[in-house]
Amino acid sequence: MAGAELTTVVVIDDHPAIVSGVEAWCAAADPPLRVVDSGATPAVAWTEPGRSAEVVLFDLQLTKELPAYVDLRRLVDAGRQVIVYSMREDRDSILTCLDLGAFAYLAKTEGPRHLVHAIHAAGRNLPYTPPAMVRAISTDTRPDRPRPTPREVDVLVNWFACESKEMVARKLGLSVRTVNSYIDRVRIRYANAGRPASTKAALVARAIQDGLIRLDEL
Image (cartoon, rainbow, N blue to C red; front, side, top):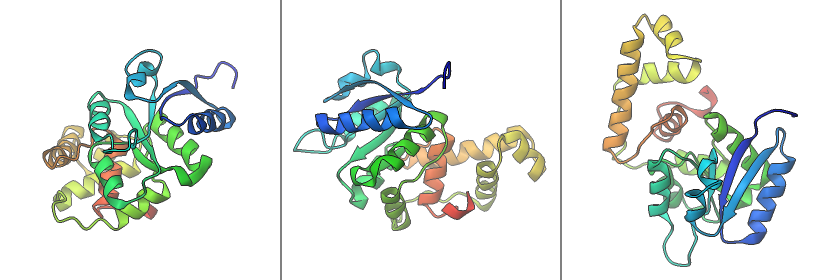
């Protein structure tokens, strides 16, 4: 790995043992991950070197009172790739974090393998769905989910399976501009529903969550 650029991580967690464990797992990963800073409050992600970290590992329950949804939204709105890392495994908490735009939700009981895979995926803007997240998504029956048209779904599914929008356009006999238009319409639907999906990975998570595509189709 000499000379290779490592994915950088800032850890927001108020338990020193958790931070030490994450640092050890990241250092032992293949390829390694680099924890550049850590702290007990979100402030560590807004000052250097945490501000420049590619991935934010975020403990949802930073106090004994309410989950830190406001801080999560602020990080997501700033364009950060946030992995929620929490002891909470209830469906409502997971779906709320995904609706706010978290890249992924990882339970602390899921171990180093899922943590490392999630961070690598976030650093490369690739989708990753840990087990707790899969369980929450597969049992989501909320009636207010956006309903893309069949053509929009067709474009989305092909985009998820292709390396570029140009390939989708050739496959479906459309212009790249039209492909972009369909994808933008779906993004707008999710944004209007309060469930932003600004990246391809986030849109994949939304599509799985809403039953537009199955995990085994990716």
